[in-house]
Length: 154
Image (tube, rainbow, N blue to C red; front, side):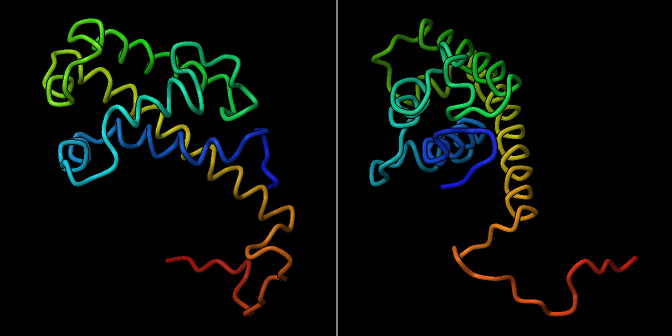
């Protein structure tokens, strides 16, 4: 897979949704607390701390699955906020306890800022791929409709 800025773009396919989930209290309550759903806080934490990054020490992931130093810094902030909550409630606490803890809003805030940057950077990378002539599905040429590069002022 071609990607501008990272060696492990498939890792990023796991990281971005995990960060977005941490940024959404509604998602957390509707999905994580539903016993019929696969995703929960433990799954999300494993994605960000164990499997595809290390939010406690994200610098080695720069160029791997994190694109910029800003992403590294924001991931570290998220790691710090999460670790503070885990220290206060205990690693074995249930998801509800995490979500109801006093420090959880700092986790959500840190994740929201990181999610914004991740998605913006992914959009920029996708735009660069498009500008470089990459098309999906692979090995296809763009279909010209006559409307490309025409902008309508409203």
